[in-house]
Image (cartoon, rainbow, N blue to C red; front, side, top):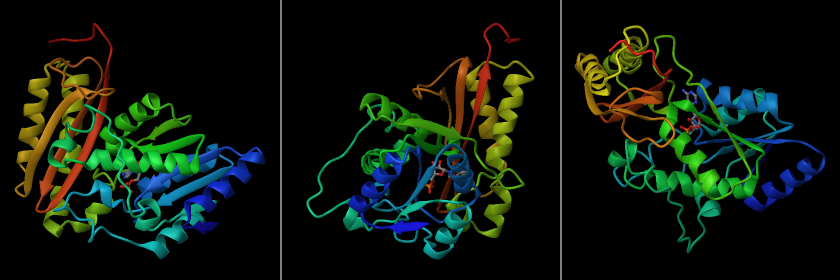
Length: 289
Ligand code: AMP
């Protein structure tokens, strides 16, 4: 495994591997790797000759009052985990390498970046789209792997790739969870013992929503949202940011559950904001209500 800090050098090494006929699989991350990241890496390993993982805490996607400086960084463990998972190339650039002095450009995906998490985190998805566009240019992957845990990010990246003609296939992998259902996240480390005990309420409330739709035939998005809110509110430390029922593709709000819909939640536990979601597919004509 090679660790590379220069974008130019990485592009050269990757170009040579592509010449040898290898498919390039790419997993962008911010490090502090856990089983969620590793599931993407394993999928990339299965499907590609050359696996590239980027580890870059992207300052552009953090708001001024957010946790950029205290975001967990674990370079040594991350490298060991990558090596063990069979990664070929780790791209670990400095902030200056990605955003040299004078950098003034941005990529905006209209309509998908301002809703849901974008309301609480203005500018966040502009930062995500900008860094992903840059990384796609540097790595030029055949396939890039993202997690369903960040459903809004996945929808936005799919749109970005279509809109700007990036020749890359986007594969979205299922959310990896702790045994009690909590979606794995680098930010779970911030939770106090009490908050950590209560945090699986996100998963349980989403399971409740699934049961209402799939077992009881409920199709009214308002009823679903109220049930999810009521369930989350039972946790004393939880403060709801949003509960949303939207179309999976373009994130527009739905009144009625139909097609592929995304039920997404964001909840504060103290200063830590957790997100989770589930996708429900409903066939036409199956409604009881
Ligand atoms: P991050 O390091 O948080 O930027 O995440 C890097 C990638 O890993 C993103 O595509 C995330 O969606 C994905 N990811 C993070 N947590 C999980 C998880 N629990 N399950 C699956 N994918 C995840």
